[in-house]
Image (tube, rainbow, N blue to C red; front, side):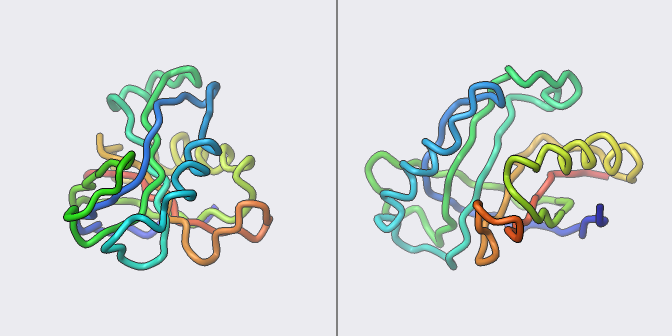
Length: 160
């Protein structure tokens, strides 16, 4: 596995949809289908990237990992302002902060291998600790969920 780049994320404003779920009760495809059907109603978008965001109730989610523990997942797009929020959508602001950015290549169902590497090998052996902020993936032009060649950026919140 490649080393991440360490980046300072500027504040981001996002609009989209969310759902409470766990890894066992994973409703990600339903969430994304619902968002994509209404995505064009979002105004003031910045670029074409989509954001798959996970917000955990607290940092112990990873220390006491249990695939049945619920978290909030968002399907979103970045916007320049919250002036116009489509009906049935919500906003999320990700505050500026430090992130470790990994590139994941492959099918979504094989992502667990990378997550295991990040949290059991890279993080404990780095000079960083996990921070209690949103985790997210940037799904850009190279993201093709049905392809082995699919590529996405994985942003993990860290602090010194």
